[in-house]
Length: 456
Image 1 (tube, rainbow, N blue to C red):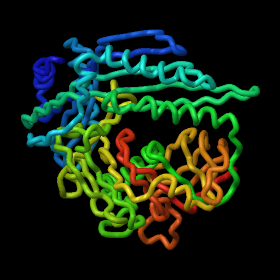
Image 2 (image 1 turned 90 degrees about the horizontal axis):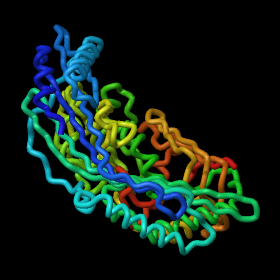
Image 3 (image 1 turned 60 degrees about the horizontal axis):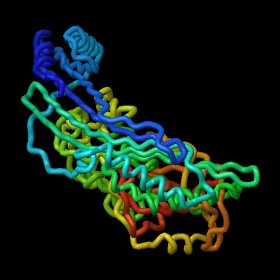
Image 4 (image 1 turned 90 degrees about the vertical axis):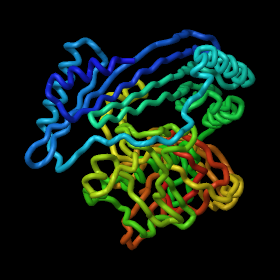
């Protein structure tokens, strides 16, 4: 681990009284497959970095600046501190304080297989994967990447906060290809898990192989307003960015939140909790990225909005306290220390319903069971979304008729509480499945909604 005393010494040499040091050390192992053969094996790859945040108090408020680095050379640490101070001089906030030490809850975020012997665990999973894929002659594996992460995080600040944790991640990316009568179809999933065992090889590979083969016979969807069934992995792309923004203290403070407390914003069958303590969900942690304890916060209770969530800044700006929702967003796990604090949800837990998937399909007169979008990137503020269908199934009179590909599904996740229309996805959910699974930072059932626009 980086010697925090050295960094702290440099910080204090610059007469900084209010500071925070965020340190992240990652140990990676990975296995690459080319076809069904192992192409590369790497073990014990270390990546360490740190971020420094400093406060500069002024007569009318405070400036906050941050900078990050991966070099521990004294000149590099000094340059990082100086950059943070320079950035603090260019910002102005009415108020900000670093968190005080608190007691942290226990969480389950460690895969002991990864901690004990990551490379053997990955090699065993690779062998299991090859055996499973060898059963399918119509589909070929073009490449696969399996990677494990051991992550050690420390947060220190000038208020004597000393927060430490260790956690694990497992990353999987692969590409499956099928060819038939001159047609080519490919399915390319990538997923993060907390534990290797959460990737159920037989069940998942069977599903992915079927999607790849079915794509060979895919047709464009019809145009019209119809029902759409969203499986958990699609829900995980759609709801956290949109609900997460409008449930944030940032949106409340800026007066752009579409949510008002105790107002109906969804169907009564929808209950959503921000659960930063859910076992083995992607953003579960004893504390957020500022050192505040994470917790469970009710966001939507039977369709009624209940609470916003806050990081340290927006808790102070709105006269309240942080709810443990200060999250650093990095491009990858390795670069999290580089990320800026954002106020959003940790894990969205969506309570399940009482439907089996077959029952949901049987109750659809005309609709699409979507399995993969080209790039589902909903706008956090407007909550509008629209994306090309990569894999899906057309449903007519309660039965799946054929595979669809191309065309687009579009809509809006949330509408204002005073809206005279009820065209949003949250207002048109008619079924939630009994089965609830972890998909990244979302714990969710399959969700079915009516009145969505499909363009063929």
